[in-house]
Each structure stands twice: as structure tokens, then as C-alpha cells.
Length: 356
Image (cartoon, rainbow, N blue to C red; front, side, top):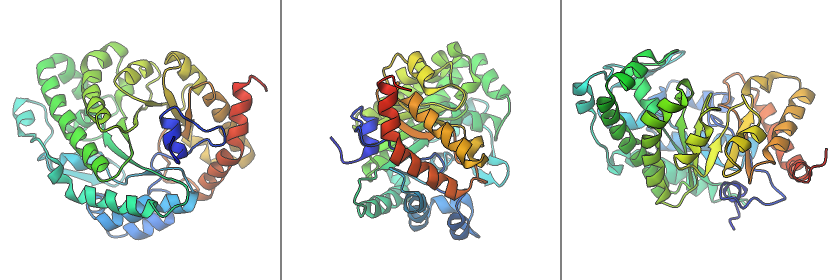
């Protein structure tokens, strides 16, 4: 059994005395020290500066005492060595210079090797070295975007509300779609592998926009490619977290793609997610990030409710149901961590024993 509360939960060996907690997008955004250190440096430039990546990744660990660090990067980063010209535009998100909408565009997308991510590996190594100085074992989580979400950005040319171009290409030209996603699966796998080989001890595959699909389309067009990524990472013997937004109807299929831990957004209680998943997976989540501005007594009760609901699962990693908003008060996040650590074990034990 690991000394890490996070890794124990992720591998279904959760200690009775600890409910682990970390936050998606904890590295950056809401922290004043992040804004200070990022001043004058673009997002993509920041992602390629190993010392800066290490500093940003570690900031929430120092401030909040979370149980794991999430590698600071962007899902667009691995597309750059594949030949994609992309910019992260403030207030909009990723913008693709030449969207991919035909066979010629897919053919332009190059395969990548871990050598293409030498700066990523260096940054991960720096983080792992700093995490080694903590008395309690805090692992680094590597992350990447899933093929569907990457494809949606490449096809749409940027963020979208309805993913109309993506869905039209997906169902209208399945052969081209699968060729594109096979290439993206190779890119995501290599990006994650580089982080694991540099010391990351868990990974999270973000399929942020998979919730826009009905189950049948997810199973036919998306699941096989996410499964390819997760299967490859399984060979590296690290816990695999699979997360998407609005995926209540897809949870079982996402788990069956090869997850050890299924991330759940805020739309359904964790106990219901566990029921849909047949009690077969560790759950991660799922406090609504929009509630972070609520009065503390109200928010604290919602945190407790998440812990109680999560007790239905074989193990539970506390998190938000999506990323930390940029307007979040860092002190509130710290109070949540303290509550989860101090009250979480008793709340989980009581819920599992069926007591109110």
C-alpha cells in the first residue's frame, strides 16, 4: 500500500483515515501568485518553460496542501510538434490557424515521439523532485486531452457551442474521422507517456466535450480511441482517470474505455454515478465549482454531502465537478481541503455504515 492517500484511493486501497482531495485547474487561474509569475508570458510560452511549469504546478500544493499535483500545461501543447499552428487567445481559448476538415488536413498531422516533449519531461522531473521534499507522499498527475476533444478543436477551429462541424464530419465521413482520431490517440499517448516516464504516477484523460454526444455515437466514434490511449497507459502501471463534462449518460462507457477512476461532474450525485457504474470504479468529484462563492456554512454542507455520496463508491477522491474558476477565492479552496481532511473520514465511515 502506498504512502499516498491519492494513490491508495485511485487503486481501491483507500485508508479509513483519509479522503484525498485535489482540484482540476488548481495550478493557475485563481491564484494571485500565478498571475504574478505569468505576467508578460503567453500561455503556450509558459507551458514550454520547465522552471515556470514547475513553479505553477507547485503553487497550489504549497498553498492548499492538496494530496496531488496536476501538471501545468494545456491540451493544445502536444499538437504543436504534430504541425498544428495554435494560439491561446485570452477570453476565447485555443484558435487553430488551419482547421482540419479533409483528408489533406489529416495527412498534415504528424506523428510525435517523446523526444518532441523533452521540455515537458524536464518540467515534470523538476516537479517530482520538489514533491519528494514533502513528508506526506504527494504524486504528480499527468494529463492530456482525449482524441474527441482534440478533434473538436481542430475541426471547429476553436471553441464551439454545438460542435456542428465536428459531428457532421464524424457521421458523414467515418473513415476520415477514425483516421484523424487514430493520429490524435498516438499524440495523446505519447504526451502522457513522456510525463509518466519523467515521474508522474497517475494520469487524467480529459474528454471535456464528450458530453455533447449521445451514447451510441460515443460508443462508435469516440470510445475506441480513448480506449487506445488508456490501454497504452495501463501498460505503464499508473492509475488512469477519465473525465468529461455533461457525461452522466456516458459514465459506464467511459469507465469501460479503460479507466481506473471515473471523474464525475456536478450534475448527478456520486451515489447515482456509482449505481450507473455498477460499483466497479473509483469515483472522483464532484462539487459544483459555481458554488465556491456561496456563504461558507452553505458551501461546507455541500462539501459534506459530496463526501457522503462518494462513500457509496469503492473509493472516492474529492474534487470539483469541473475546473477551478478564475474568480474563485483561494482561501475558500484551502478551507475545503481542511474540511475534507478533518471531517472526511468520519463522514465517509458514517455514510458507509448507513448512519445519518
